[in-house]
Image: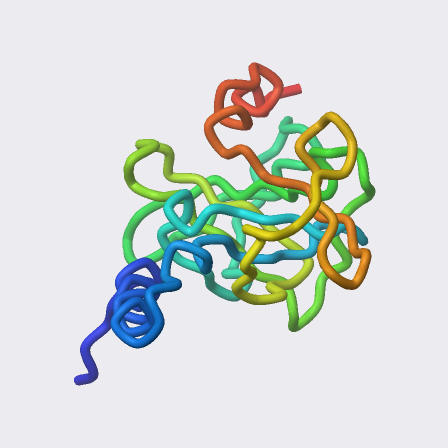
Length: 162
């Protein structure tokens, strides 16, 4: 049987190889994702794994952005549609959807549904855009920064019941 490992372990291995060859590992610590029609950056240290949308069990009497609970390798994870949570409309379900499982350091068995994963991004040279922490890349694309600790501190995120 093939050995399984998490995205975080794989990413660390890739970063170590990049660092050994070019010394630029710290620049590739963010993952670009699409939430609704917006581009977002997520720190790789904030996520444990990226996976396709698993089979969900719908939980009655919850907010519309709380899309259900998933059994992932024997552990239950609450799955939140980040687009709906941010009032950007429900995520259109498709093959490109991914769930970002939060890192173990947060002690939350939670997954965040995103429209798609764009890939690793080096945002170190990007210009600030506005006062809310957004960035603008070389092509002029505006990127929002997902602050996972701040998200987990929001009472609205923690209160899924209606």
